[in-house]
Image (tube, rainbow over all chains, first blue to last red; front, side):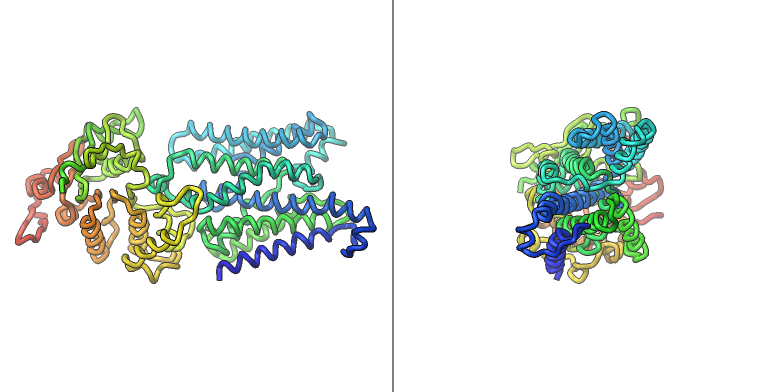
Length: 322
Length: 259
């Protein structure tokens, strides 16, 4: 019975992926002869829509997976990639990149990614100096680091040239996949794919991180290195995704919670469903972002809108959030 | 059985949580025989839980060593990681697992890091669920079962681990008489199968009834350890609890009377 659900989700995902290739402002029903004869249509499909839909799939799956891993490691169903200041720092990195490197996307991404990792390192170092509850001190350190970088973002916005740079920064902070190309997708997959494979094989053992530390130790989880490895992998995932899509919120928070409602809390069952649901959610949001109005709407607006509505639904359902 | 040659050797153990604070355990020595049950008796704050975590290998002693002596082999407890079972006093479980999923987690030391449980693992954990009379709760969420049932589920997970040494921190404390009796029968069975059990308690009756050896942990890092028969006497208990207590042994029935 439960296995059937995953096949239903896989079929849904494939239908949504294929369907999304034909959604857009340039309307043309799919006919093979048009595809052959109309080179503009061919270009739009192959160079724009397909890489964009696939990028949406990758970032949705990745952010949702990173959310699930973060929630499990921090033993808190409301934890998220933004928790350790990673999102804010990556946003700062990108804004800085836009100011310094003008609009060279590769450098903007590298800058966003580096600051994301830097924020993690800072949060970890600060929390290591704090005595007492490790999880709590890490969350508090994350809040502080996050605040530092949002102050930084504010400063950069203030300094930015209001005609060219400021709109670029704002657009980036709201998240968008408008710049998706095959080369960006493939480059990012180089980081994202190995991390997804890692967590796929680690999907059952990840459960141990949700246990009390002493119990986890007794069950053979060596004190720290598996924890740091998982944490690092999930931050790699988050910051490499943010570096191409901008700050896209709510996916990492909301999708794992819905996945757990479907499968239960065992991460070996929740991870596949989280990956599928994340992909479906992001593709639908991006379809809306690019096709609803003649102009592009930032993706982050739709993930926040739909995500928060789903979150309210979750609260009202009175299902325990776990 | 050369049980006297097989033991967990604790030699000159000292431990404190922070360097500034007083030592929780100071120059502690005892050899816990393998294949027996040992009780830790003591008031709150005398270091019972700390001692269990030291034996688990989760904490490292400041001074001294904890090693397993078995058939002329000497193994450090840290190397035994995964084969020492640990049942904490209470447990914070942030996600709502089912009984089946939760017990299966006990199989972790037998499963490769990048693998999922095999059919054999599922069979073993199912058998343990059955033997602890939890089968009807198999698919229940942990949030929906009673405290006594949860305790049994946690014991089931520890047993699914198939550990050689089982450490239990006050396992009897929150149990009613029936569940206590049940736990007693589990401990007896485990001992029969050659496992080593160390548990802490603050009830001398639990020591008298279930343990072969006992360690009494007193104030100011003092301790008294040996065979339960010899250690648990009216004089020792009266002295320890600072109230007159009599230990009554009558036709194999043991009882404790507080005057």
